[in-house]
Length: 256
Length: 319
Image (cartoon, rainbow over all chains, first blue to last red; front, side, top):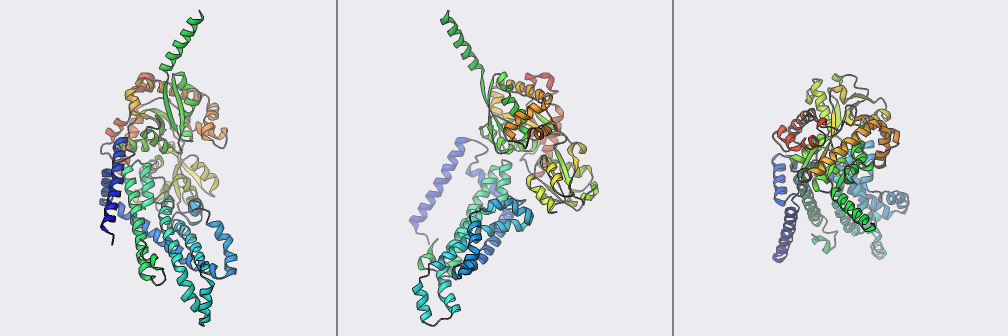
């Protein structure tokens, strides 16, 4: 629940942003800088024709699959690399190399290797997600105090119980933090991914509208992308707070 | 005596400065922009008293956006982008033809296609809304292939080669250098037909800010005179033109650029047939939802202004 003064301040902040945009569009009077009213009209038209909802569905599906796969690979691999030195030594050079190569650099190889279908687009979002989650999870394992492990061992737990009761809960807040950052970046990556032979999706709509100087459509799509990002972050935050609340520190449960 | 000479020199300089007008010429590093590049770099605009400077953009659509935004005064583009810009309120005017070509666009196919009927059931790549897309629509209509008998995949031209190599598409419609590159690099791929073989000529057109055309008519007329002189020079000296253009285009070699320049003709004119074809393209674009307009003829007539070339060189137009 947001307190009333905070709600008021948020409203004033949004109104200021919209007013500044309106003033700038009036001052420039250019088809390249549509007013907020024109952007809303474009958004309404895109909704009416079904284009926007279809774009949202396509992009959300791509982000969701890429993000979930990224987490599904990043968390176990991060745990394995954090817990087992041979795994870390084996994987680290490749991980360290790849995490500094941005997804955009893989656009052309992706289309060459995986074609113009969904695979190449989802792969880029997976790539964006996996390293952030993996590195954070590894950092979570390293942060576990040895005393905590020793006291658990002194209670007679086996290796599996040690993992399930100590290591996993201790790393979860790190993995969740990595996932949230990765989710934000996935929304950036989807624009790049939808440069590849896409004929739908929010990223495609932004690029295509720009090509045809349909600036109202372009800004409507940008607006939607931002709103979707906020909504997705809230959703992940709520889901992790609900399902993983036993594993997260109290402050983490209320980050919003 | 000396004082008189100095005074005369000052008056002459002031008068020359008054006659010199500034023009920012928006170009992308592409052969299509050879006319504008040569006109600036080889001094054809300067000879007409136009002090022009090149403003480099990353792409031709980028240069067009630059003109709409007022960051450049003049550029060259094909019909669909500037029809779209005008339909969306861009204050631009088409004042002459930059180039014409029957060889620049082509269809490229793999081994599964040997005749028109083989296109049925195939997936064809094309950049949405481009001249190549119009070529594809024209080809299907001419070959009597219903559009629902092929699958279109909208892909930017550079990515079409990889898609053809992977057999994600079996043909694509695009322009040079991509069509030649595909036929050289993709096994069993070949150029199926150039646009002139399909009975289609494409134009690159010179568009200028409407504010200049209406408010600085003399500058517009002098610019067109300079461009006509540059066009005639390119036609006579393609190798020299390639050397000048390659300073901006940065092609693999001057010879390659010269060959590409010779694929185009540089008429230095503005003919009615260009308007007629543009109306056809406008009708197609409106039907596709590319341009928010209802009347193709009205849109084209708002865009084109042959009065400038009529004033600059009446023999170069039949309007």
